[in-house]
Amino acid sequence: MSGNGAIAQDVLAARVEGPPLLLVEVPAEGGGLELLIYDEAGTLIDVSFVPAALAEEPVGDVS
Image 1 (cartoon, rainbow, N blue to C red):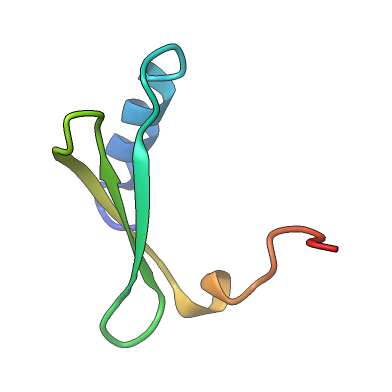
Image 2 (cartoon, rainbow, N blue to C red):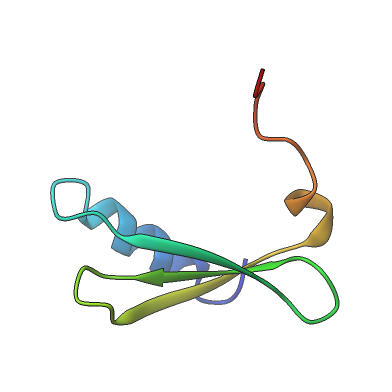
């Protein structure tokens, strides 16, 4: 994660009861993904980086 990863965890933890956040995945330069996190008003509140090795791992069984 980026240096803002801890901020993202705090923001997400504080919003468990609030309106949903929008998470957008975009390809990062050099591989991996940038996770853009927007609030309900459409304001960008955090950006985190996911390395390519983690982005390519399956999260769960999709069958």
